Amino acid sequence: MNSFLRIFLVTISFFVMSFANIQKDKIYNVAVFKNWMPYYYVNNKQEPSGFAVDIFEEIAKDIGIKYKYTVIDNWNEFWPLVNSGKIDIIPDISTTKNRKKSLLFSNTTNTFEITIYKRATSKKLKEINDFHNKTVAVVNRNIGVSVMQKYPQIKTKVFNNRFDAFYALISGEVDGICYPRPLTNYSLRKLNLDDKIIPLNENLFEIKRAIGVISHNTELVDKINESILKIKENRRYAFIYQKWFEKEKSFEFSYEQIFYLVIIVILIMMGFVSLIIFYSIRKNWLMTEKDLTKELDLRTTKLEEANEELKKLARIDYLTNIFNRRHFFDISKQYFEIARRNNTKLCMISLDLDNFKTINDTYGHKVGDIVLIEFTKIVNLFMRKSDLFGRIGGEEFSIVLQNTSIEDSFIVCEKIRRKVENTTLKHENKTIQFTVSIGIVQLTSENTVDELLEKSDLALYQAKENGRNTIVKYDLKATDNYKNKKRQ
Image 1 (cartoon, rainbow, N blue to C red):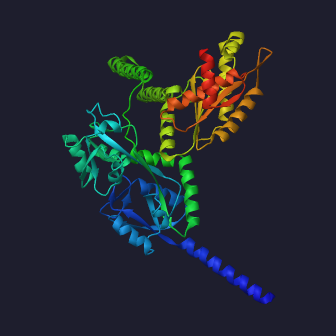
Image 2: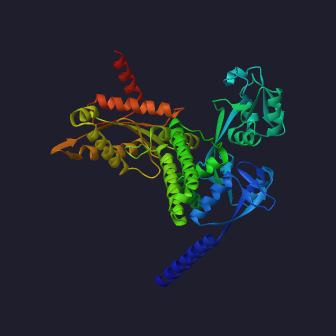
Image 3: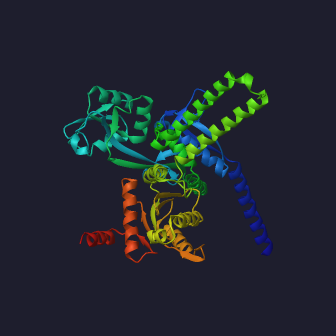
């Protein structure tokens, strides 16, 4: 009996190891569409590109799988290949109930938002109800057709492709076009029509999109999910998303940047004037060619240092060496939009040093500056590379935590609060202590970063009312009571 058991266990182990090796050496067949930008595109050399391809290749590299691409023209070709076992992975596909019968889906990689676009000159068309008795273009066999069926009071006109629909809208043949936002934005930028055709603020429908895997390979899906979380945390996802979906921002100079640019121009002009004077009186000088080269190198170095200082001042607070107000809000808006699109967690935290005016009045502004610097050092001890920390003004600071729940944010804030409370500074044989009040809010239904910040500020004010040196999570009911109390 024992011999039989040993033989059975050895056999089972052999098959498990063989299966593991087969999985390790497996080459996955990955489907890509020939021309469906910005998600998929295949050039004449059969080289795929696009958002879905870039995301998949980043994940495949991370989890170490081998693959080859199978190029397909349309969805009619795709499903027979899946059902016959000739396709293992599709890098980007909408997650619907019917598709879940044939595929396993990863965590969401992006959101397909369906909305109505209008001419930029149509000022009176601001929301969906304004299109009653108007005509909206839809594209044949696109989801926009079924979405518009929910609005029988709006007329529809079917076109064979999105480009015919765009030009019908420009010419006035229709009043709007219902089509997925990512595809529309990409096409309008390529056609230079993004200043003539603009979207409504509201979305009519949203579809979650993810990576599809053949239904029996749950282990591969788990690995893909871990990798998706990793590339979102290390900002590779944000970089790829911006590459394919966001319009390149034109550079605008701030007043501060203009001031330093003027200084650089003046320095350059002074350099030229110095050279002119040098050559005009060269005979009277004993400067050798080597000395001249050294002088020019020195001037170039100074100009480069001034340029680097300009770049730093545009985004860094001069005292605390963290992000300044402007740069903090520029980056936090990007974090906010990514969290909303991908339905990920995000928390805004407002921090304010307690009785800071008393510190300044008692010990002087120089000591106040030392307190601010020490406080930023403490907070930075608990910040991840993906976290955003900035000085909003005076003793007010803000933090944005990505992929973090309000409960986990509270834990981080409590560590900061305790560390601050237990920190002492010495000044002229006197011991200085300070505390911080903190308000936290998690992104739910807010439409802008400003709304989120307003709620974290309300929680912060409640923390002040509670006696300072405390942390308050935003609560709608509690904050309404607090507002009514302030009015009274």
